[in-house]
Length: 195
Image (cartoon, rainbow, N blue to C red; front, top):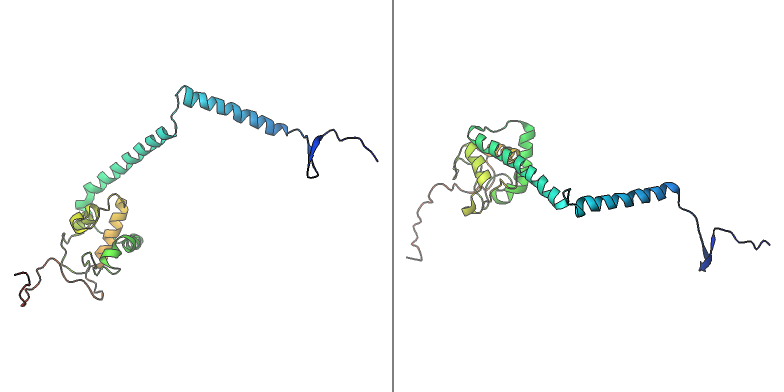
């Protein structure tokens, strides 16, 4: 039996396990040194000297660029509303139908028949009957009637797609449509209980 000790075996033992004193691979050691040096340079450059932008400043710059792009797109869309026409592209109409199903159908009904919101299938439109009127209504909303402005939630091309889909609903005959709202209801023969 050979009692000579392995030179890599350390003296301590835990639960029958002995630790080997292996050297780390050189590439790992150099990688550790490089990352440590990089961390020191990073700290000096960004935190001590303040020469570079920290994450919050980078985020603010990116947000400013994004806001300028968004503002330019909105300005182009707003200036084109008066000359806009509904899209006849089936892909755009299908996209508009998807948007309508998720954002408009809860109030206007799946088929545009009107629930809380107005009926979009008849010719009695409260806020104007042209395609451009529909664009403005979707874009600005009708806050006094509970319809939010979609300009902060939808992109201009999404507003155009949904308005194009709504344009296709006009003249359809869904079951149980909401009665026309831009006309006065006929007077009832029964006296009002508040008179």
